[in-house]
Length: 184
Image 1: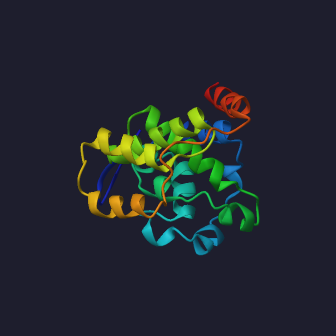
Image 2 (image 1 turned 180 degrees about the vertical axis):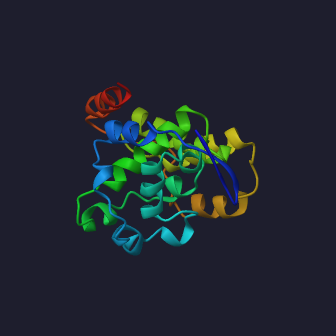
Image 3 (image 1 turned 90 degrees about the vertical axis):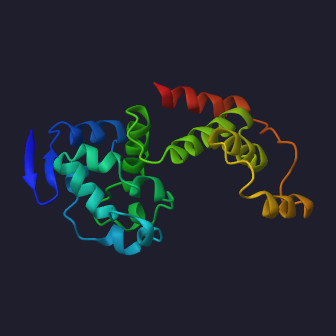
């Protein structure tokens, strides 16, 4: 269904809110726009839409606007919103689901964001924790931006701030089990 607004035609997906609710397990319908999540969000200054606006857009079925929003990627998953919400709307779970749908449906505006997300999760699945040097190297190769951070990167390496070899998490099987359950 399409509606006309000042910005142009808006496509409404009436099932979008229910899909996000089902996948996240979060009670999206409980949100009454009190703004507590947005006022307590440490990342809100960098978002194109505030957290309460994202929830409202999901409720309204504004699928494309939500999934192409930078807000779902800027969210730091700090739990401030979920902790403070008077109706226990777990916005962190909602943001996680929105990121996954955005990746799956290839709606991420910035390719580097999607690349970073995949490489980050791939490293955790492989090593059980993050290995910063391999994250940086893989991202640089993927984006073909090899030399823009070379000077500070060498300084960081020389100071020993990055480990050359990854340390594998002892309970790696349990981490991989989590990834397998999440893929279902």
